[in-house]
Image (tube, rainbow over all chains, first blue to last red; front, side, top):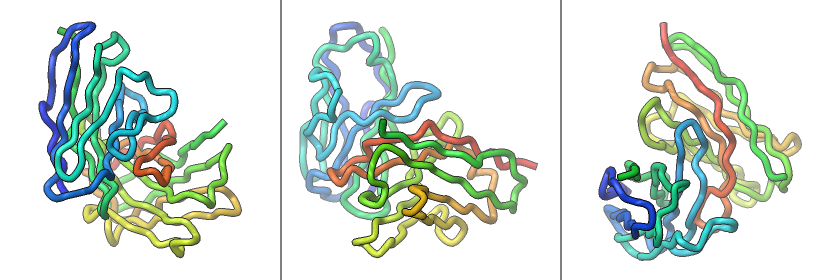
Length: 106
Length: 120
């Protein structure tokens, strides 16, 4: 299953609402996760099962979608949110990741 | 504290072998599927493979890019996961992360990674 993220990069300002899309090449039910990664660090889990917030993650992050189209939304971008974001499907093997979306400061 | 610590990375020549280890602590290791994920320099995340838990008969699954060259194993008595890498290619150069499957459709605990460089 291929995952296509869009956009591949974006520039945004502090306080902006940011939406990242992940499209699956076939239906994956709600078996999708989102991660945040900063340079030189391991990925940090944000969302599991498409829309459930990982413990300790700020509520400005939210996920939605099912089937083949999913979104990650950051309601009000904060300085610490500038990073690369990845979606991941765990519906079937092989597990796959999207290509990533780099969120940069405008 | 829940923790995963990878070790065993280094420089190896093309065609060579290397064994990575992942030591787990702070949770019941035997209750979880465990994964290896890698990231080549400047690239995105790539799933390498999975070791399923005992109820799933310790079955392993691999990405096509490593199938037949890499072998994942686990020792639940030592709370450890392993990745045996053979016939290494330059394109296997990456940071290798160990991760825990949460059983809620994500990987909720990650190690800091160990770097593997395949070069002559």
